[in-house]
Image 1 (spheres, rainbow, N blue to C red):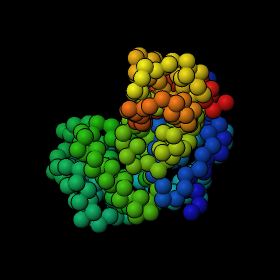
Image 2: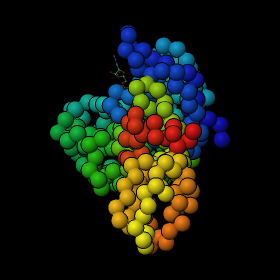
Image 3: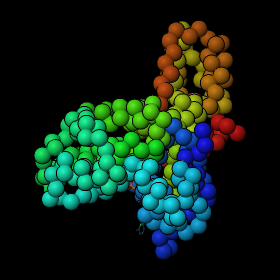
Image 4: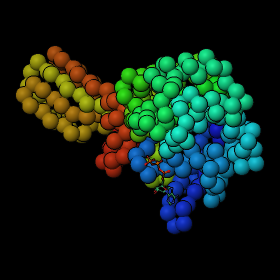
Length: 305
Ligand SMILES: Nc1ncnc2c1ncn2[C@@H]1O[C@H](COP(=O)(O)OP(=O)(O)OP(=O)(O)O)[C@@H](O)[C@H]1O
């Protein structure tokens, strides 16, 4: 399937401030892409550029084959957008607000809106201004999903949602993908992205530092290993093995981290009788911090050199 989002050296500066630096990325049709980074990394800047809410300093964005600047109206009809700071008229009731937004999009079947409100636990008659942050976010989600757009662009979609509603949101994303919709969602929460994303992009200080599948990111990451041997272990047999760091040997127990292939460690261990082996896969959370820490970066460089 053709790329739904194509970014070529997309750059945005705010005066002398860095927003985004030469970001190139293709998002394929039908994929769920998790866009991860800490506060200020450039996630919202990227998203605003996709929708022509701000203009690039240089580089190009193509969305659904369209130029966001020249074809803004056509593009918006095909996109469900949840901004990071979703705000609507506080005087309106939830159902009035959603009907208004549905009409702007040429109409949405009433049962679809009702279904989404029910699934997310939204009270149709409540005034927007009386809603908590989380409930306002639900209104934002309903308006993004309700017209079943080809492309969903969601900026921090689970912000303020309780865990049960987060689960329901993830189901909505899974259903969207099953229906052939493409989802681009930003987050700094690993768990939600890990659960639904096909690929993950990690952005730091305006630069895309890696793009990969969740499975491959895990493979490339550092794992914690604990080996128990029948006899007391000889530290020299494990020290200096490629990718092995943080080695501690106490009696029969060997603990370390391993980056890249575990093969050298397995072969060193195989010279002994191994009575127990524990290898902890990092969750995306650890992986993320590993990517952010200079130490993690150096460790990987050594392991892959
Ligand atoms: N209107 C603006 N004027 C000046 N600088 C800005 C503006 N908008 C964003 N920036 C700067 O651009 C950088 C990227 O900001 P952006 O909002 O895109 O980050 P983010 O990854 O979405 O962060 P968050 O998770 O906090 O929303 C930050 O350094 C920010 O201070």
